[in-house]
Image 1 (cartoon, rainbow, N blue to C red):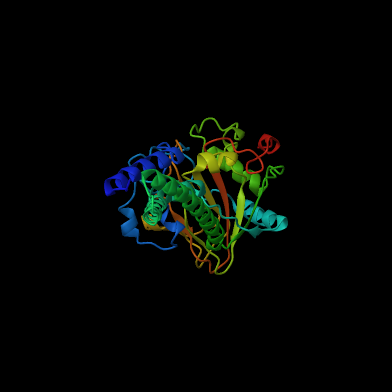
Image 2 (spheres, rainbow, N blue to C red):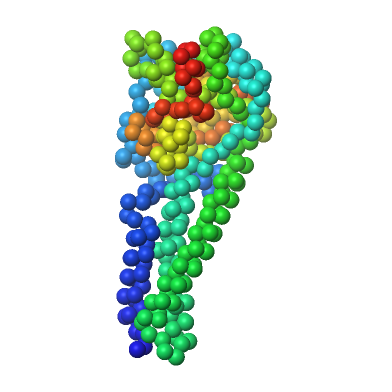
Length: 351
């Protein structure tokens, strides 16, 4: 029996529906790829029109009466806390980081799992299916006894072959992108998780951060209650011409990729450890907001809402350094951050 065009169409519909629904169920999370993943520069106006903020809820609460707290942007909220830490504490953080030794700052490919699944899903539903059918049809036409059953066998064999090739190619591409992302960040950094010196810069930074994230200003007696959600303070140095390209601190795949480090990042607290005369600004390109480093001041923003929903308005960058810039960072996560990323029970007990 010769194969008709109608039979081809019906067969293709059945093949793509059954194969893709089995391999890629409808519950598979989908993800919008950040603009900065493929380009370090973008049109602010064009991206601003694509904000998807309808579902972004309220941020986590903070102590709104915290000394020096000033809102510099609304919707999303961004704050500056003036004189968050004194000069001696800032200098101690720099000194302790230098003593411990700084290595190149790591860059994580946020959303790597979702990106890979999405690309494979698109390939399976499109090119792989069509190529498998086209080749299968050609093979039947070259056969003297071609029929619908033979077409089915050919197409299924071709589909499996081309799916494997697509899977391997996409996996290699994703790994290549992960390696390439490291070039977007050229700073050096180290973590400080030793809080034994109660007057040291690290302990002071964590205690002040815990107070800031405690919305009840009358209850500041247990900083460990809030500090357990922190990653250990990270001190970062940007020397001349070093840069951090536009990026997001939250991760749309945080529930899986960041499960071992407290899940989603709900807040970023950046502390400027020295005055920087030239270069090194922190810039939120989509919001047209630039912050100049000033020793002791801290910058606070919220990469995701209180429930962990990614906020795509908070893309930011560390502009090219001219003078050396030192910062310290604490990420506040949705869940308890266990060591080695978070503070140990011993360190928390020393607060």
